[in-house]
Image (tube, rainbow, N blue to C red; front, side, top):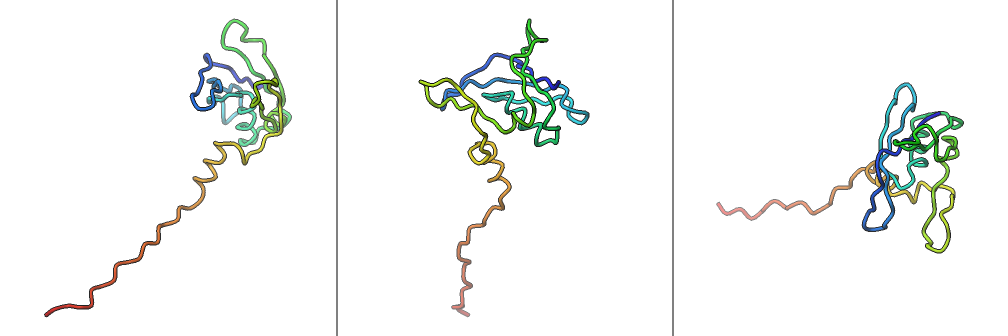
Length: 135
């Protein structure tokens, strides 16, 4: 089983007030032994990262703590299912729930898409040579 380990307490970001957790991924495959990141939903974020790296969709993955209960997972899923889902907790009146993941709404995917686009140069008019030369 691939292990996503929470490495510290969560902290809140100011704009959206979501709690962000630091995590590492262990046993991610032969070429990627340890990966790390920060996310408000670390297990699902790790699933998306591993899915992009080519890990089998049927591989089991679990969320673990670093402390006393480090051998007992909080939740587990498969890489393929976790990569397709996201947590929706926009409404304070309803509990968080899993909804399909839309890559077009992901801020990090949008930044990557914008970075991949070629930059357009500004097309300011070129200065014209001075034809009135006094001799």
